[in-house]
Image (cartoon, rainbow over all chains, first blue to last red; front, side):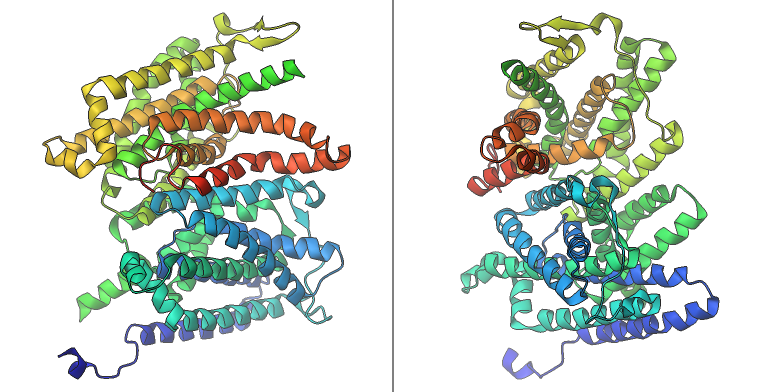
Length: 326
Length: 305
């Protein structure tokens, strides 16, 4: 019987991915010395941007990969994060922890309300509704003329940490972003492995059966949706500091699409994959942008081909190749 | 005030019939093929560019419009055969990604072929000028022509869908496509026809609007999201829903933008009313959508959520 064969094992699929994440984090930590040697300070800003997007992609993967909720409005939360920095600092509140708290509170409220409405629907409806709510936030900030509206708003300074301006140094900002990424990865990892995470995955696989054994899918999904939105807004706080500029462009629907691309590129439902996907997508963008001014054309072709020929992203490709080798 | 209201109502109606032309194809593609097509807004843009090009080549708006149709059919068919057809059996996520890729490809291609500066199309002479409506109020003939054309197409679609064999298949397909295919209908061919019909309608909307808007690469995107709102409000797969949804969204959008601040002025002081009105106006349609979905998650005429 099954009881006899149930030998206690560690979660088998998780361990190698955790190892991959650790390798990634070590590589990330080695970026600044290498860039310093190359003597191109601009590269460190690009790397910071990549890490910030990795946070957002990972947060999206939490609901997209583990909860099968295709949110097409996640750029809105990036926007809440960036504008939390701009608006609070214009009132003299420059501490990054207060700004993060503000971003998280606004995002939690927005995610709670729009999530509660969106989760009443399924499939195509859910995609289109989250997209529409994302646009709603986008238009709100476009009409926010006190902060530049469409043109955006330049920040006079970066956020401070407990009164000190250490983030003005690009390398410090980079390591701070990396620290947030690692902390949130650990949190996501815990969430996915917890009872909550398992219920969420169960709902992804079969909502009717989960409901039959006494779980309310709506509450679990909404909680995950709110958590994901809040995490994404933290990425926005870091992005505003990286760019020292905020504008509604951070929340356009193209940005939401790019976040989904990152998650899928790395392989959905893997967390580590989302981080790798963000790195791959943004590097591809940078490289294509250097080669041709029409990088969007090639990126688009790449996307279509990827969907048609490698539905499971880079992780799928790697696993496929490994499977063939063995 | 009454004049302004009538003027905005007509503007809303004009935007509404355009939205309907785009939404009709989109709702059929969603409803019958269960495909999320982000590239639908691209077709609207391409239609406008086709008209601008052909009208400039032939020197006549009418020849441009006539030549736009075969070009639109070719674009629709090629898109269906090369990409969309391979997405029917795939997840919504894959469809989102692939059609998002198509949007990027199309926007860049348009920039390469036609350049970044917007094109303008002259209004055909016979439809230029304005007609007096009531009192001192004038309204452009061309906009009236758009409204009439849009309503005529809506009527034609209604006849096709409710009184022809292909329309019967479309309705059956939107309800249960497996059953339709089990009854011996070539579902692949039906899908190709539906997609091409939707593409032609979207291109037609773009061509119609070309003389009153500047034709540029961003034009498909703002319309795409509004069209999504229309389809969601109307209920996926429902042409009737798309029509009512389109008119509702367009009228709320245009009337709300003008009368929202005026109404607010009665409760707030003028400066605050102007500020709040400007911020609320672009959000109105989304609030409307949220309210409708809260009451009816499957939209006004949607069967299933």
